[in-house]
Image (cartoon, rainbow, N blue to C red):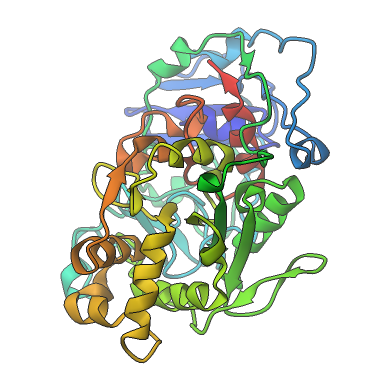
Length: 449
């Protein structure tokens, strides 16, 4: 994962992985903006440079549904990006963490690896959740809700170097001064040795292009919900510029609780919600999406499309691949994307499922699906994906069909998801919360290894 993270960050020229046993640096991934190497070896480390970055098709080509591959083959990957014990990289400037893409209080900073409030630091609770705090004591925290009081590991999550190897930081206190353990990325290092050096371009239209003359059974209405603050607006604006993700569907909409410009003449549609919820191991956001689905139903775009698709802003989404899949599920009420249950990065509902949901909204006051809310009293401590799954299947009797090609993410045990090379049929790779990482995943996915 350390190599893949570097591969996705445009400024990254090299990476260093600190193994267990190196004094002061147990398990750490650092990103470098130079490629100058030490002549002396440092035991307990692995380093390298990223493999060649496949190019991304220009926006014009994406909009036309065509990708003109470069005639020259990519150069063979230099040996330096393979696993190496030596040499090591020289000091360099720490990664800038002042971006609005950093996490705020109550948000998961495990993947952004930085906090928007520079007086806070990112500490791990478990392998799926990390939070921004001033300090962290291992164990159960009394301010967690009673049903979410599991142990905090309090491992410090950073992208920057300790001062011994990089520039001194005055605030917050450095890793070297605090002597805190640093989070280990989930990684299979042997995968780097297995990567071939030559890449083959998939022929035909780009996987994310909008297919023409699509049969009606594949018509897609796609939408995303974005927060008014943070990285998501920038993500969807870039996706629009590439005509990718939801913007390659037959109809699209972006929802938020305030009006924001996605592009000239294209604004967010207003949802009556503050878009706030409690965050723990998961976001307890069921009520937020009850308001979102209310607006989706009111807008009525689903009526003229065979499938309604909710895609997260940080999900690298290829609608053409989805069109192929939905044609194979003509009798499904909706599609399940994970063996552990429906996961939220992509939710694919047939028109009959949205119609059943709409009827349940109309059965009450129109603000919420009446029988689902009544029959699922614990929904306030659920994620929206679990609520939608239980509402449709258990309460409304709409049955799903399973297709694991829909999504690739670590929470569904998809191996090496961060390379975006899990077959040419994967519809979504998740999560990618930086524009450059998102774009590189798109580019990687058009190549077959």
